[in-house]
Image 1: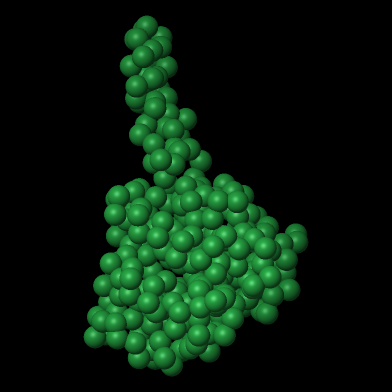
Image 2: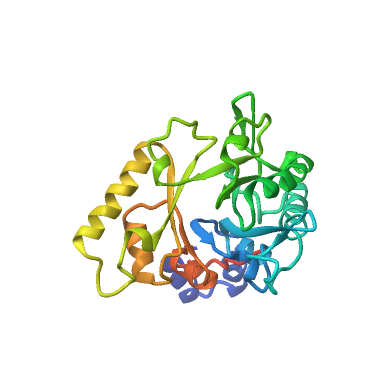
Length: 279
């Protein structure tokens, strides 16, 4: 019911319960297609809270301990909350099997950026059996053909790139660096370019970005897009000015540790007649 119709209805005395029935829309999750929930594993409710906010990309670090992939920066990370399987893979698989709206999004996979915080090769060797166990959940490349799953895993940090590139089937992709912008590797192997913000920019969200840095940002994004890849900058200042510059420049993902604040920035203003909440 439009605002004009509402005024007319009230003026002629239509039963207010009719309006109430229309005003309360079905609960749903609005996807934040540009948002990356950085360092999700340190949040009070890893994974679940990010999904409820609509994030379609989540960043998690893992380290190898006792032949298991533990969630966290290192073995000294007191905020570690269990294994990668317990905190992420198993819950995501349950959501997929139940057709939950928290994971389903019109065929677009949820992205998991997984960073290895200990030696890459042993980490990947520990990850391999988990990937095979949850093969039905994951985007898979077999015989150079990609099959999109409910979840796509992109490895960051220092994974064993040569070993991963020849895997068949392969359940992960690689997060590219600047040298990969002109790579001839297929998009299903290197779909993204991720760059540390402070390596290329001094601006931290002051009054305005300098023209030469704005030009550099625009050129980097354009070059990556011309290669049909996606780009994100990590460790950007948690500043709405920075986020606005990135959004205007058409970056693909904006990341932050302040998930609620980024959610508010990226979300469209709600309709006054629609209740939008997570299921």
